Image 1: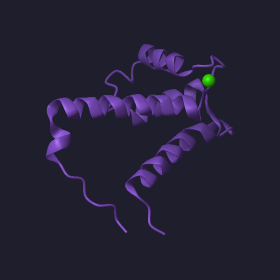
Image 2: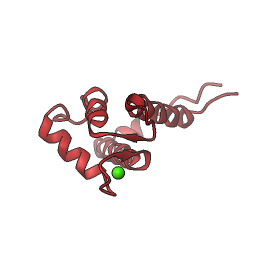
Image 3: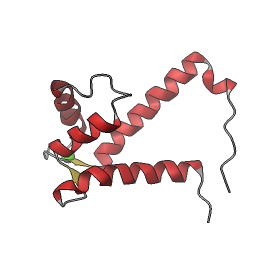
Image 4: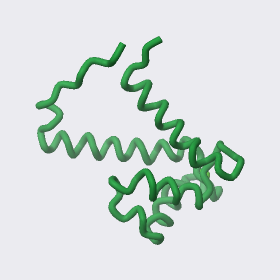
Amino acid sequence: MSFTRLDVCVGLLVETFNMYAKKDGNASTLTKAEAKELFKAELKGTLVKATEEEETDKIFNELDADKDGVINFQEFVTLVGTMATLCHDYLTELGELAKHELPAPRQ
Ligand SMILES: [Ca+2]
């Protein structure tokens, strides 16, 4: 069986969420402490202020759409979708997407 680039991306997304979510024994949601750990470790190169306490609180509260005090996978994916959109917009603006041809997926 071979995996496409998108398969690998989705797998990493699920794996990353689970790696932090399972720390309290419940792998289906991120507590605020788990989310902050994820933000600090995984978003340090993306969200410049992700390591600042006030900023992580703000990100957590914005992601917690149903206001139940935890972040479920769907809420987490909202963040990743926003990051992907910003990245796409940035590269489009630079004209970078038209310059580069992506390699074919490995078989
Ligand atoms: Ca929630």
